[in-house]
Image 1 (cartoon, rainbow, N blue to C red):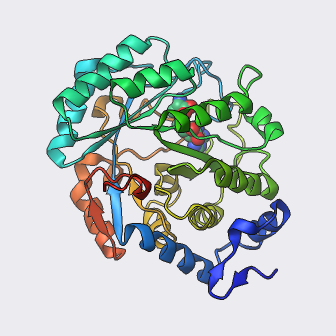
Image 2 (cartoon, helix red, strand yellow):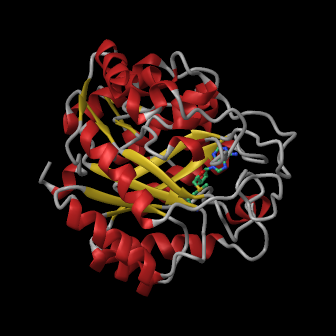
Amino acid sequence: MNLYIGDRMDIKNLSKQELAELIEDNANGLDPHIGSLALREKEKYYQNRIFARGLIEFTNICKNNCYYCGIRGENKNIHRYRLNKEQILSCCKVGSELGFSTFVLQGGEDLYFTDEKMCDIIYSIKSHYPDCAITLSIGEKTKKTYQAYKNAGADRYLLRHETANEKHYGMLHPHDMSLENRKRCLYDLMEIGFETGAGFMVGSPYQTYENLAEDLLFLKELKPHMVGIGPFLPHHDTPFKDFKNGSFELTITMLALTRLMLGDVLLPATTALATLKPDIGRTKAFLVGANVVMPNLTLSEYRDDYLLYDNKLSSGNEAAQSIKNLEKEIMKSGNILDMSRGNNVRLKNL
Ligand code: SAM
């Protein structure tokens, strides 16, 4: 396949079939030339900076039943928890003292957190830490609710699309969830003015190379500010318990191709990738254009209860408290840790 125009890769003009072939060709190991093009693309926008976000997993209560997810509502074998406002603020305090200026509030779709309660939490965090960025990752809501979060002070929203293929979406989720609604949410978020994150798992059950090509084409159309990509990892109490891990190599390939497709995107080296390869996962991701880390700030007594998949890391360099060690790991990879808000460069106020 003739993929190169001079030294630049022409990924943006490839058809679904060509993308699928490219992905398949690099499934067992990324062509180093493509890896270095992806790294160069990242450096064009963000130099050698890696941005840190403090992750607060504030509730593992969820009304949904995604077949892959360990905190799905029907899993009766986990200890459920939710943090109250004071506990969330205490996580932010620890984070702020450690130097974090972005807080990511992630959770299941927990109906306890009404718009009023969520807005109060967002407003309170912003009152205590006016210069921080607040990222929410709490699932599918109406446009009105997203707007209320924005008005209360939220800056960013992460909602992985999971897969851009409708049939595949239906194999990963029960009938009460739809790709159509997931996409509607993402377009609403973009329209409201959130820095918006989409994303997908690599190696989720029944996924094909064509599906991954469709993910890239959807991202090209949506133009999100952030994209979360991690390997699927099975959880022992889900319908997908007997499926195998997504591939590390293919995840690295998808990170590189997403960087080349979207240029200025913020791309985390995800916890799932670090869980799959704790020694080299993050570093390999940085080498192909990942530029975000999201260490865990959740109160330690609850960290093990937010188990999306088996063996999920929340200690070592995934713990916010180990930020100095993480900084060393980042420096070893030739990068620097940046604790500023780290907006997407499209917002021009880094
Ligand atoms: N409820 C919110 C939502 O739906 O966006 C946020 C929480 S949800 C648990 C966060 C992400 O975890 C999902 O978008 C999914 O991609 C990822 N995830 C869940 N189960 C996983 C698994 N078994 N392996 C890898 N990633 C998983």
